[in-house]
Amino acid sequence: MLLADDQPLIRAGFRVFIDAAPDMTVVGEAADGAEAIRLAGELTPDVTLMDIRMPGMDGIAATQTITTDPRLSATRVLVLTTFELDEYVFEALRSGASGFLGKGVEPDELINAVRVVARGEALLSPLATRQLIADYVSHPRPSAGPATGSLDRLTNRETEVVRLVATGLSNDEIAEALFLSPLTVKTHINRSMTKLGARDRAQLVVIAYQANLVQPPPSDARAG
Image 1 (tube, rainbow, N blue to C red):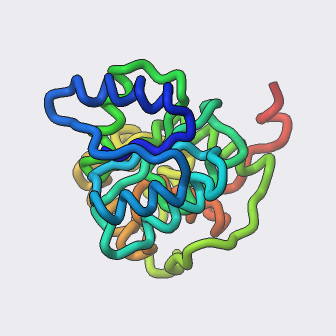
Image 2: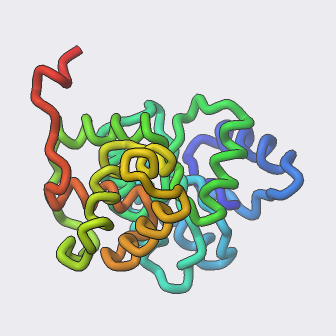
């Protein structure tokens, strides 16, 4: 794993937890986005733990550079935020991050998150998805970013599955809603990601909202 954070104490704390796990090791540390890109290219880590706010090149720009580099196609980026969802998380996910964690995360949650992302899955829980949706609805972002495929490429069933993913449902909940098996739901999601050029589930949610596949709730439903 590569650690990218401008605060040495935070890097040191994460290193202790990660190196203590039997199946993980920290291979490098970066203090800014540019250094993170350089070390990622040299070390090709399975996962880069990326702070968003760093001097010079920030974590969003570094994430996009890493995730769009063909040589680093196996490297996943897990972004760190001071708050669980801040104004930069949407851009980080759109730039290719596989999920996000708050800096106050518990050690066991951190280790589990790294394992999830290393397997190629997205760390985007139903609660986190709903928060992302609420933030996007309240503060719409321009649609600039990596080009994505047209939703017209999806079958009707795939479109329905993607819509439910974007509403924050888990695979099991989608399976129950559509009377499908969780394995079938996972297959539909994987095929949809391939057709749309989405790196993972997180980007699938972003694409769905950019394409207006999911309608925001009434303003009074978001109050409070």
